[in-house]
Image 1 (cartoon, one colour):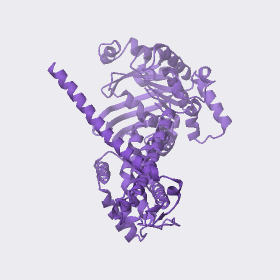
Image 2 (cartoon, each protein chain N blue to C red):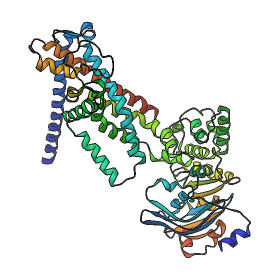
Image 3 (cartoon, rainbow over the protein chains, first blue to last red):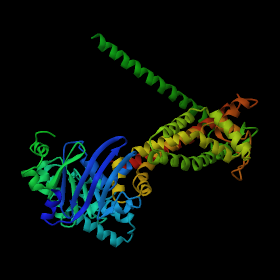
Length: 261
Length: 283
């Protein structure tokens, strides 16, 4: 059913996950996940706390690798390449698949150095080139006008909402194709949240976006597709409109209407 | 009512104990300053001892102690910091790492005379360095390593995990992340703890007694394979080995005062580094 729904609106698949299990040590966190994430669309991952949606998100840039004793079984393909292949260049993968975390994590450096951090890692040293990247990234993250006069001031002096948009700009600076957002607005006030949501809608034109969110309204507002996770399993996946108006599973309906979660 | 008066009593008791400790420390410092100040002169600081320390100055001992501190830093800082980076950033949590940690803590509790004996056996005799600056520095380095490792590891653990994740997520390798987004923030804390440890080593007598310190050596060393005098040992010699210890009492106090100022300067440097860097990095 998933496949027919996607075919109906003709989108290409960016991330293809097949029969994927994930373990923290001996504890299994994901069970047989199958999902085709469409390119240049926003896909929301919803579900109650501890359902595995963040874990799933972190499998896509192999961020779980840094936790001792984790193990993945199955296939995670991005652009047709298995990213868990032993020849995978994790550095190149993470450049292609950017991530923004739940709690904004500005580095204790200037705004400029925060944004230039990624490009510098990937070998760009020319000052003019870096300046251009910093400006472009901040413009894309809708933060340029607010910070253009204090690029060399500490990023820690920005407000919470600005910090999170700066983290998005920092992720954009390495020109990712996929952007993973782990509850990026959960710690923000409504106004900042609205700005981040606008930003996501704007970025969707060039990027494949996956966003973990606890906020049903948010998922409804900004996502094209929704995946519902429950106890480590994907219960349902489909166009957001359909999931929200006509869910195929009782569990999905109960969760969306707030009967549990 | 009864419990309240008990509270008050405990409070004053604790307070009295604290003040007692402070008074003891203040008295020691006051006594050393009062008796040491009169001998403190340009001559005392810049001349070699004469008549086995009864006259002249303590320059060779000052230079010796400074060289030992520098040598200890040169040997212990890289080694200790590297170990701390390994333990904090690379080592997997497990039985082996736990044993390693236990070993380091045990090392911290080994008496300094045992380190001295170890240094004598390994550096002076087996490696044939002889009683020398290098043997003494390496011995002191072994002694302060646990302090450096533990405090450096704490400083590294103080850097939020989110900074590591943020860097890795941008495509940094593990080492790039450590070098660019962990170490710069941890170094001040690592330095502070390490320097405090080394400051303690500057005042140690037992390890250098067996590995480097000379009883009486009017000249300054030419190489790291020379023996030197050192302040703590000179103090020990003046106070217990001198034929007329009572007569050289002022010289003993002067030496003690110089040693104390030296160690306090080192500690002050550590505190300054910390407070300056704290302002720079906060999260």
